[in-house]
Image 1 (cartoon, rainbow, N blue to C red):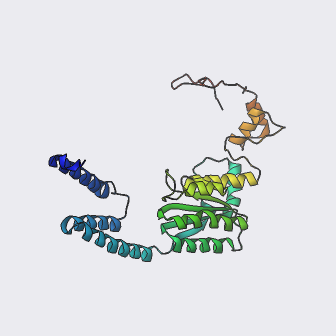
Image 2 (image 1 turned 90 degrees about the vertical axis):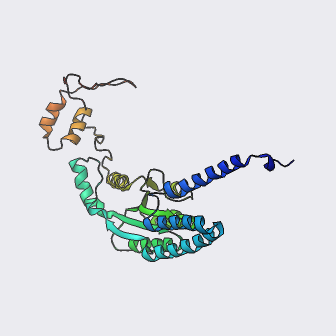
Image 3 (image 1 turned 30 degrees about the vertical axis):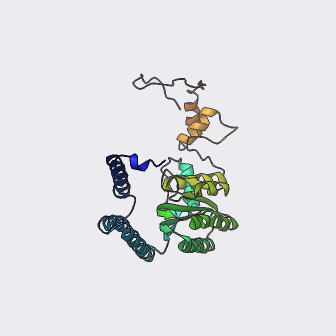
Length: 288
């Protein structure tokens, strides 16, 4: 039994109109900010051609325009590496003790940051891999390799494989630990399961460059045997808990002054959910 002839024409028209408006909203409004001006202009032009000349003409125009824009973008952003730098002057926003800062001043030169830019596909992903390999072959030792993807717009599936597996293998051959900074909270700009692949490679994935530098600092401090947390003192059989903590917070104190100050502290064990203090409580003590 045919049902379509019994559907009122006004209902079918409203349905088609609703679908059309929803597609226009998705193409023109929801894509604002997701593409650069050249790509968004192409989307607007495709919509105009489809409206004026028809669907078939719009598809043909879309094929030609997208190919042309892709060629222009690759000519402008053919090199996927914006720049490389050593971590000598780079520091995370984490507070560090004076001893940790001194250790990092001597160690951060072993961190190499590679800033990746543009659209990654199979062609320039290979160029990225070769650039990383050249940097790691230089005389200066690289302990931590940081790949910053903050400026990357998209990564296709073949590039995700190269970036996720082959670069990790190159870094491991040179004895470098790898950290990827996705530059966004929802992961890398690709439909491929790049984050999951990287986790199987036993590398670190950070949300942004600051978190990546923090991880690199912790790796270097752990290699040197220092505490990776700025407020967690190293275990010392010679010092009690208060004195160890004060040695981290105030390293310039003499041993006599530190021990004298530590004698005024006492330990307190808190239960889960117990309130230590509330805002506007009277200041009667110092709590570390």
